[in-house]
Image 1 (cartoon, rainbow, N blue to C red):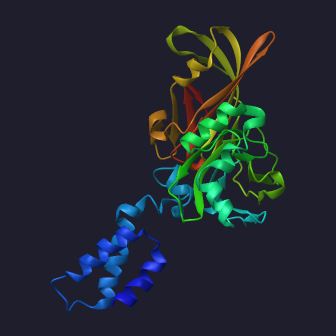
Image 2 (image 1 turned 90 degrees about the vertical axis):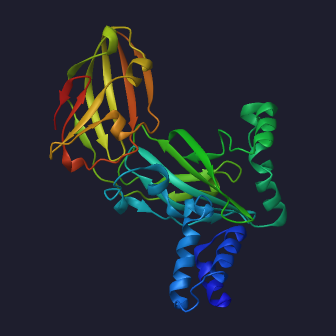
Image 3 (image 1 turned 180 degrees about the horizontal axis):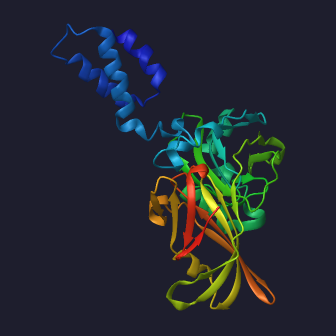
Length: 324
């Protein structure tokens, strides 16, 4: 039975300590006549639900790591590109999703030589790729913290790239979830993703296939919270996982802080109303452009709950309704 058990465990990828606990529990079972196959299935399920869930989490991909609720509308757009290697390291994008504005990826970097593995695990190769633009203080900080730095990951053409490390998938590799946003993207244009210490010559090429966004041009006046003034929404584009609003200033104190607290709701065709809290705050950001005689602001909404664009009946920003 141990041999058959190990064959199953080799398929579910779990830490040794968790394997030991499950095998011990199986050997203590009081009902030895239960079919071996059922016991093995029980063990595999327990493996997936045990404390190793986080360690295997990156295997679930972008949908489970970045979003909540029903993600069925996103599934057709998840891709698994090829990996690239420079002889010392291999960069793999395990899964990636791009909706025309925001991109989400799960990436693994594997060391291919003993020295490369040591430098990757100690964070040396990441830290020492930062001194030119960030100085020695940044290098020392990254060596101490073991974290990825601001130049560790790059999507060509993206802004606001962020990352969060996942449990290591193996003794010679590390994994991260990475996301970024695009102010503009031309359909058919490929996106290149690379790690700073490998450089853009070793980039994974992503060929997105995305749904057409819902574009509204309402030219409606939007009051700001607490009587701070008002702006005109000239364009509001909704993507599967967020939206981009373009606003022109009319009067009052216009600031990004005003938009962070600006109520937004989405009404679906079945009558369901989703508030900003229902959609989730996936990392809103804005760009304030001082253009005379009016202030122009581009504001990026990021949703943790995806939206089926075909089901949107209307959008309301602080009480002002925008309709397709």
